Length: 398
Image (cartoon, rainbow, N blue to C red; front, side, top):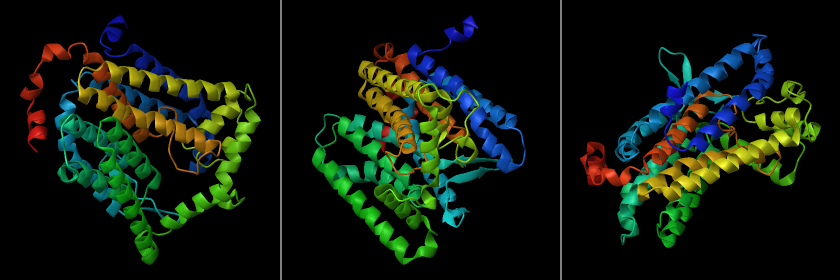
């Protein structure tokens, strides 16, 4: 065991936070999975517990493997992965999956394995690394908006366009995170205003086209409208069912909760082990359990900022913020949805909710952060060795 800890590099507090969140997740997932067990007809929640355990084990292997990779390699890898991500998103979008008549083309089946993979989560990590690479490249340079369109904004908008039809919330989060990272990276504010305006115009055109040709995306625009209208008007409709049950769960939890495994609303919430697991946690562990999670994610954000500030390279600073902020932002959105501060988005609670893709991509991002923190002291020794990396040479020449 001592040898294992010796091989764990990077910020030890990040490791501790991730371990605490992962350990904490077992009981809520095991408890909330009873609804999944009933609907699947298996009658046993142990299978879902084992599945969540295996997802986390593989996730920690991803963290360990990625954090041993010198983070400078991610510059070139982001260039290589952009075409791969675009192909995966295109395949996902073309498969035309529908759930209850609505477009839900978010997952792609992995051949010979029998598993599905949500490609938008991989795309979000790759695009943030890509943006961090480009912003570090143009840092302190005088650039024109025209110069940045092809190398920066075309890939970003291509990714967003392919995610938007089936997953508006993920598209909005990625767009917001890219805007924030670009602002932090010193991209001219006047150019950012143009991009935001273009994004809003593109969204408007998309909605109009979808309404004009409803067969292209069955019921998807109507779903967005219903969620926003129900949230704004506070209407008591069937579409608001999950929020009502989540609020009942939170109100039932009081200060100390009903106790582990004693949630009642888990039997009524359709997404009790994923999208609305925060409500189940508060019901079973009370306000104290909810505050524990909030403190953990705030602590994670604090460590991300510290690691970013201590990095000796611009790319390292932006890379940590680029892949780290979405984790915490997604957690805050998930908790806000449960207490009706946000309309329903379908975002999971990182490292807590069940679901392999979400856990693995969160672990990929955490591995990148730990890679930066483990090498910030040795970056000066490396000197100009970045230029010897063929992937980085490729990224600089394109």
